[in-house]
Length: 377
Ligand code: GLA
Image (cartoon, rainbow, N blue to C red; front, top):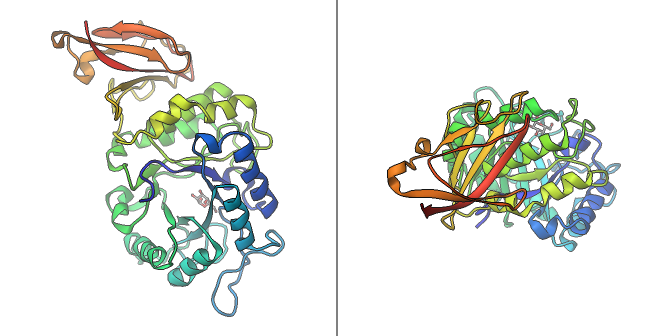
């Protein structure tokens, strides 16, 4: 079964946009292996929009742009597969893609077969140029069926930006993940707003079909197709931590040939990835109701818990200003006889048994994340 856990990989859009070509894809596949990203779970190498010619061929089939992909998609898929990775591509439920290339509207079964013939393992499916009266659920279901009929197992990645209350119907179309928001750009504000917009909708996300809060911007540092000022390394840490806590698919968006060491290590952080890949996929609970200094509590499959403190404000928060976590807010009262024995996942430090409440200092635009177990006090 596909997408038992949140899918992990790389997508071309955030950095390369229309400047995508087969050399970039090959180099990225090499980098995913050589940098140890494959070892921690990154698997899908996905070409986003702008890969095809502007017109279909005489048989109605999409054609890869021969200038960008001189060896053809089949050869590229073979290369990606030879690295032990999986190959992804992109199309759109409308008549054209968002960048104006042919879309799959009314060509769904032909296109799914073409992708299967090329050895595609993952299809991102966008929502631009959709005929106004054609319902999204039907269009996604049509491609969902076409992929199933294609003869190849293909992960179906829906991308309708959260329109039409997508979380309520997308599972029924066979999709394995679904974009729930507009596009991320490389700024703190963008990823913060995207993540927080989904806090109340994560209950729909789970094994088989995950809420996708967009590709990662970690390590982009203000360069690339979705540039918007960039983030500090610590802000990228907050970004990655939110994506892991929310169990979003993890699709790297940076150029791996220039991504700095901090961000490579961040995206390989085993503690965070373990939270992202937790098999029960239970949504975190917003404990304190504060959307600028949110505190989240989350169950893990092995019986442990995550307690995560974020600070989106411009001031450090400490016990006197916003970062007090009252344990009764997530149900652990003094009378329970229990506290939480916690470990800081970034420093590894065992901070011991905490009872009733915690004051945690969190620097501006930073986070502190603990993992631990209930323990008798
Ligand atoms: C939409 C999607 C993006 C990207 C572009 C490509 O905006 O949301 O993720 O795929 O289209 O044109």
